[in-house]
Image 1 (spheres, rainbow, N blue to C red):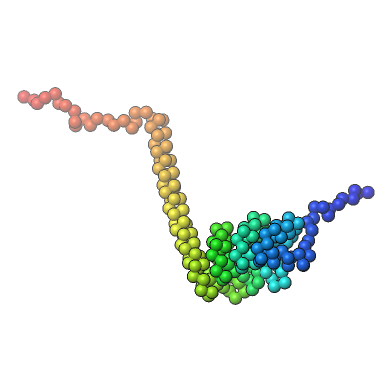
Image 2 (image 1 turned 180 degrees about the vertical axis):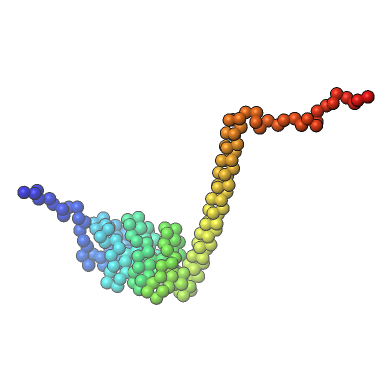
Length: 200
């Protein structure tokens, strides 16, 4: 007879619908203690769950500008680009609501600017439609800096290739000189030899 194993201890518990609501609303309200408690209790089984209006904890935290909770959720494995109500990801909510610090943090953590919601709008579209010029300018500047960084990285890579090619050529030349000593010595030109004085 096979031994009876208790597999329940290795399976994380599932939160109730009420606990999911509490989790999402705690993220919205900035209740970091409650968010942490439910994360410790349920971990991955709750972190990306939706509430009754299809919002998630991370989209609620971005909506409210609760950067500390956004950071906590990301550090614990939340999907940064997960869509919430109306298909909007966290960055779109931060952009629409003018949460400049939270939007900057999400960008630094790798939030996509290409994510579109149910109406086809991107985060920068939401910032502009809501007249949140500070967030729109932040995104534009971030894109410019990223493009500048891409160009600089390409230039560095090209220079590195040139340096490596030069070093390889110098190494080959050194090996040739070492393998055939005297071959590369400059021989005197016989035309430049002294004739021993003018003939008479």
